[in-house]
Length: 241
Image 1 (cartoon, helix red, strand yellow):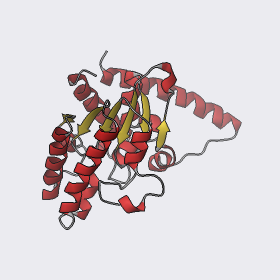
Image 2 (tube, helix red, strand yellow):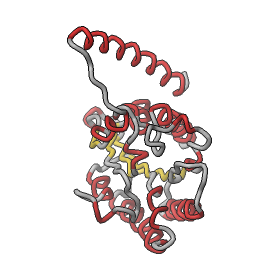
Image 3 (cartoon, helix red, strand yellow):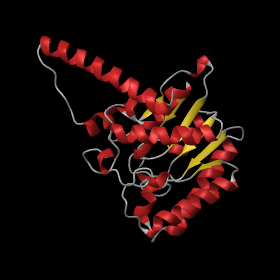
């Protein structure tokens, strides 16, 4: 059974379960709801979602809101968690809204994401970072390029036995400023420099599908995250994972 079919089956089961819960809540006095983006904003950032004590691979994600799951109805609906559940991986996902290699870096309230990823001592690191750096281009182009090289070099040095998978940075509109391709090129070159696996094409995965967007028209909704999970699943399978 393909991941798409498994997701569809789980979605049906989830809807049936949710319907049962809603009926029970109605009998008990009525249920309240919140917008999907709000739910994800309050729950999506996470450390490990399972225990590595069971021998599963620990996979750390280095990314922004598209990997944090902003716009999804729950943590379980984001693509990273779907992919980890499919493979039995322990997920460590400190991905942060608005973050880039440079953008908003000085505004982090806690430890830098690179430090959090290293602390997890993961078996695999999956990086999707880069989208938000378009908003400081071209003025800080040199800083962005240097930061990409520095982050990946630091991660590789601290985690010499970890497998690195660098994903082409996501993009969220069909219109693409010139900076998108520049940053993609820098990320690809940095991936080669640390001998990482590279997944191309992710900046186009949302192209032509406005129905995959959440109410903010910026982030994926649950359908969009499922589609990203399907695409990511196929790419990871090509890499033998």
